[in-house]
Length: 422
Image (cartoon, rainbow, N blue to C red; front, side):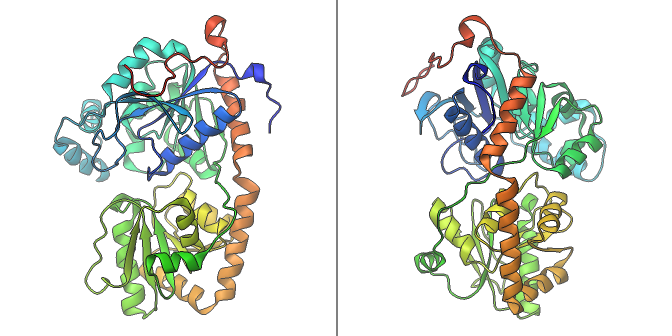
């Protein structure tokens, strides 16, 4: 642990994920939860500021609005507002993806034709001075875009920057250049940030922590979920932006054209609609408890990562911790960086290379074991929470001034009650 002293850990920290809860599927949201828990464990006064919604697709307010103690953390929830049909966002989003340059007014309409959290914005207008720092993330969502600008001198961003059309829009310039600091997770993300916005706010590559399971029981996973035979694993949201549809196409080529005797086990959120011929080859196990999730990784031939838009990819790290190799898309800069740096797997550009990578692992299990072992060494050496939290703390102290007077008192408890209040 770093040499930071208790008297340096003064002032309240507001951690601001768009969603929060034990069953959240989303890398940034999971990471921000662990950051909050880790900083509170080190003596910081931490509060979660989030929405009352937990489902990424529905955005229904399924949790009580107000302040409550949840698993030891003070959580202040605000109503998620989705009052527009999203038609304009869809049209403008397709133009953005096609390379059209949207006007600033069009970008603002694109942003606001989606989920908004106006009560969070109003809360910060009234109470931002009660926080030493506000840590938002990821960059893409309305709370980061709008609410970070209420008190930019206190706002820090867990950036999660991807090489995607949205990142190049002008509306994000104030966020990436005008806040107090940016936390970046990998060198490819750092390079991308400089390429997109040369005038960055103060920033640091702090990495990301991954929890290390004590043990694995892949046989228990197979028995519990009725999985037989060799399988590859995908974890995360089942949606086009994560490469899910393309993964189904590539997997179909591997098993139907190349004749590989494999199944695709998938866990996470979103609909699973296997194409014709793959109905008995794609097994959806939904959202799993942590122990079952870890066992699923350990039993896989390999973990497959088809997402081009990753800032870190904790699922890759979870696979490597289980000693299993990764087959990742080469076009994803962060994915390629991890796989090639660690030598913990194989990358692919198209369906044929995807099938060939799987065939290599099927036919040469000793290579799969070696790659998985190298991947685990890579994670253990680079991405442990103590190291990451050291960097986060050091930069909070450097980028945000310590409060004075009453606000500096550690352990302030205003609003910290179990139940719901206003």
